[in-house]
Length: 145
Image (cartoon, rainbow, N blue to C red; front, side, top):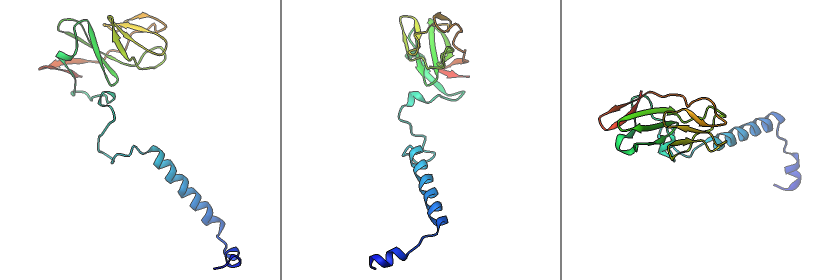
């Protein structure tokens, strides 16, 4: 096929538009893909997955007295020996996730809010407490719900 024959080939406008649409849809799907098979349940960080009600959040031995742990979007504290408390890890000030428990406070990295191990705001800008989450001890585990 020479250049003149190529110039005579005409592609209908609808075909070009449809092809472009299919290409854009494929690009959008590729951008949203995690690269994991659907339903595989694989995750890059198991701590970012929030356990469902009835699933273990942590082992009781993993939650120090006078401190706590952050599991996904749930904070579990042990203010005094044998007393476990659960809270949402979402800061009520601006919706950031708390990311650290140190020196008896649950800390939010966004604006410096701090909460005590009972969930109450002790340093602003947050004025409201962390939202309570029901937790209970089952055997050696702390379970949501």
